[in-house]
Length: 73
Image 1 (tube, rainbow, N blue to C red):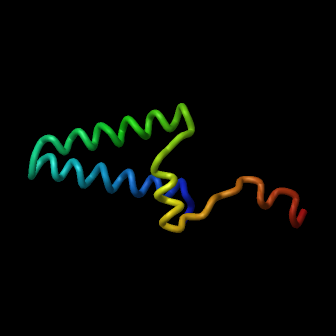
Image 2: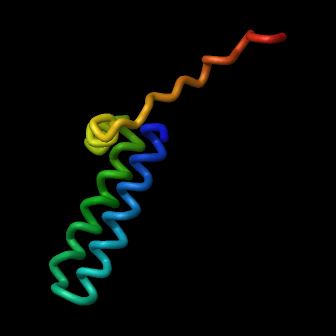
């Protein structure tokens, strides 16, 4: 799995778990949902995503867009 896909999976899981915890345990868990949303938005503008480091530690692979251009043509 690539880094981008791993970041999306981690973000989605954290949002779902924090919403469920906010509904069933304590409303303070909704702050985690807001934080994850904020980090996704800021990463779209800055290109910095702390979750990418976690994805790389978990073994996600970097994806290169230009790896197959010009081959077998």
